[in-house]
Length: 125
Image 1: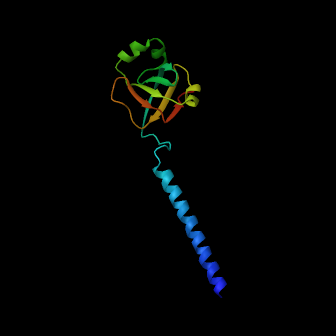
Image 2 (image 1 turned 45 degrees about the horizontal axis):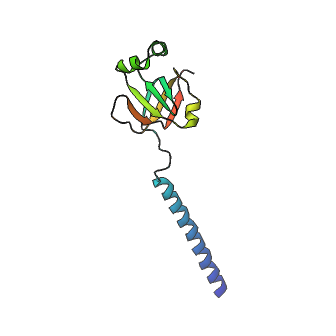
Image 3 (image 1 turned 180 degrees about the vertical axis):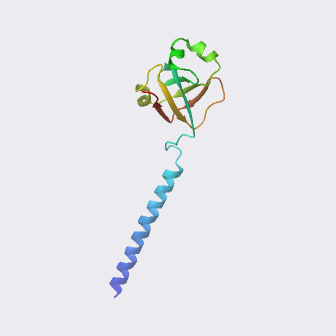
């Protein structure tokens, strides 16, 4: 009888340890700031300029209007303008004058504003 009692205690201890490990691992990934965040806001617009791993997106312009403007003219138009930092994977799928919807979490308060793209998708592809 003593052996069954010991085995029962060992199994209970192992199950509690596994459960605690699972709980703490889940808490780590939930609170870890390096995990990708979901975007809290979106901007739609046309890519006017591309530099290395950044794009300039200006809202309120059609593709035809954007093609007939320089970068300076587009910025002076007074529309929403934002420089977004991208990953190389995101950057490789884009080209100038693509219409895009960019998801982000926060923007610097400047003109043009600056932020990091969390998601990006082409519109009217």
